Amino acid sequence: MLEIKKLLPLGSDDDYFSEIIKSENKRPTTRKRKSGGSRMKFPKLNHMVEVGLVSEGDDCFYRNKEEESKAKIYGGNNVEFNGKIISLNEWASQFVTGGKINAYEYCIVKEKNKTLAELRVENKELFYGMGFDSIYDI
Image 1 (tube, one colour):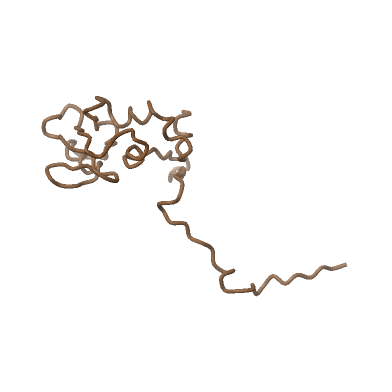
Image 2 (cartoon, rainbow, N blue to C red):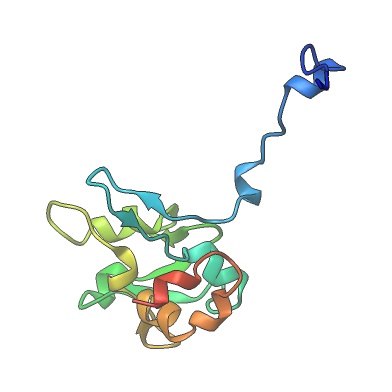
């Protein structure tokens, strides 16, 4: 006995398309490294502001270079430094010679006297449910 169902063509043009999720609504995921391992995705500065861990306008500075690196946390993943709005990584890269830098390891939030990296690990529970849970199980 045979059961015949019409699969193609679909009923309407809308059936051929899938919805694209806007990038700001996507949940963070781990990415695959070129070498085959997984690259973990850490909460960024904008996530830290979102959960109230730091605030826009908080003073920060680069470790061991407090006077010349004074900045303020700005919106998104930016800081205000010398009257300009620049990314956190761009700001931190001004205080090292060559190579990449993890700004979160060197940016100290003055009011808390801790680096951004220390703050996000110590307050990991604030990020539960945001797609970052697995990074703290290491």
